Image 1 (cartoon, rainbow, N blue to C red):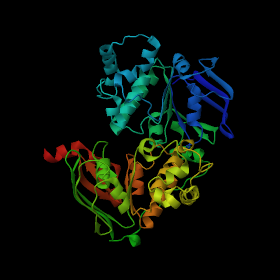
Image 2 (cartoon, rainbow, N blue to C red):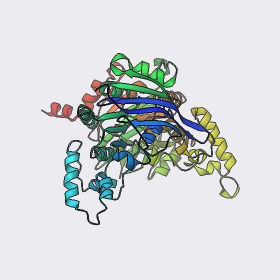
Image 3 (cartoon, helix red, strand yellow):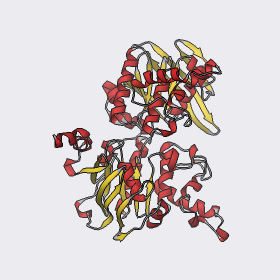
Image 4 (cartoon, rainbow, N blue to C red):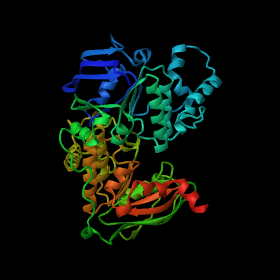
Length: 506
């Protein structure tokens, strides 16, 4: 990193109607540095990045790149200027190949009627070799979310960037993939490329970034040298208050119960998981850990009959369930909150009220089966109060909300059917630290109220912080359980890793 400023944002403002998303923002990026941007959802980080990338035009202010004032009228202009942006939300074309997605911008610029697909795939293979073993000929729709994110990153690496913006790039990556990305980031920085890194994960910021700037309520607050501060300094600057406890108190000894909410016995799915048996007791939060691809999500989806040809027994509050499809699971009182909030969790363009009632329209229907707007609003208002949902109007689309509030709408949709048990897959993915703290509290309150809570999370500190027990999944089987003082990242990773199995069989 040098003291040479490559990008300067001077007094930039941006409004959307009555909402001022950016208020006279200043920001400086030095040549060859990895500069983190931190702030709660709605703080203005993504709006500023969209201004820098030409997706949005500022109402006022200046963008100075390489010492010259520039007008970035579109993403194409941003690319010509050497600015690349990897969005948090994957924006690939699902029906064409990985190679075509990676070089789509270059193909469009060439305007050639003929495309040499073999050459395209060869070039894509070279770019992907740094990141992952992905076949360039594969259609994007056939890739996992994790692999799609790596393709997005590969697209950016093909650009001749001076400035590379990464918006929550590790949200869908495995730990191994994330470490590969961090090594690439450092190599790029060593070559003089400047990186803006947006993340809610403090460990990533402190392990990989040189400086961090904090935004709050559309305003620039402060910039720190990462080496000079602690995570608490960043968190407190983000929220404008001191957060004493990110995780609520766990179940006390006096609260422990022998009442079993969920019993799973001998659950099998030929390709994905085998001989899964466990119990969830009243009042506790049960965590599921494991590497991505271990089968942890597939197990809970199998219990709910969301996918797979599943055999085995499921008991809920002492009653054996006959489940053929997800509708049976909902009717019995078991619901699943997807890890893919935008794809499966909420309907982005539908209103907040419509989303909340979507699982069971009978509860908001009036005479003749027609949906009652009044009942719909009443339900959304009640659950919105419970979850401290922040919104303008209940008729606003969910897309108008911050990530944390979108997640609360997805949770409200689950709660609308008065569930006995909720499976939550990555419950705080893409959610800022303030909203995370609220969601953690909500989950503990639900558990204390008698609702069964099973949580899956790739963030081991979060899983350890919210869970009373953690089951570890490896290669489609439960490899062990950790609880109490044994609930450490080291013990969980030991049980989750293939290396552990090899050691045992050596």
